[in-house]
Length: 138
Image 1 (tube, rainbow, N blue to C red):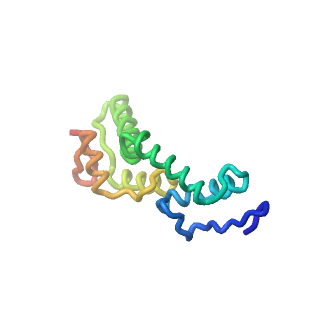
Image 2 (cartoon, helix red, strand yellow):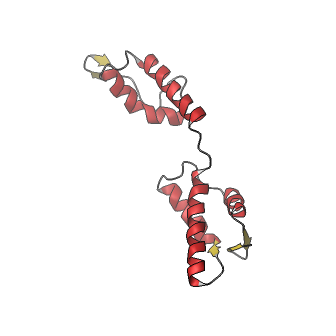
Image 3 (tube, helix red, strand yellow):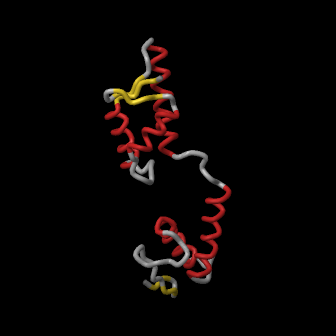
């Protein structure tokens, strides 16, 4: 494609050297706009700057916990609040929790499909144990 006299050959299938596939997916439009608006002279310059940005994000802005852990934490907190207000022991149905996790993934709130073993570890960290299809607070 030629835009403003510049030749663009960017596509998701093309390997932009030095960027991972997810970084490449995020960067394609940004590179095209940056080159066409003359922020960068060429793709190599754009990739060099973007690599530095991604390295900064990975090294300096590390997430302290996973999004799955955050989402389950909010769900557990809500259940525990409801249990206190309703005067019952907090518990979560295992299938319901699995459905929530799948729904979060489908909505794009999670980058990776949630695995049961991760849910087991996270629920254990919140003091829950799986018993006959229910997560029970220990």
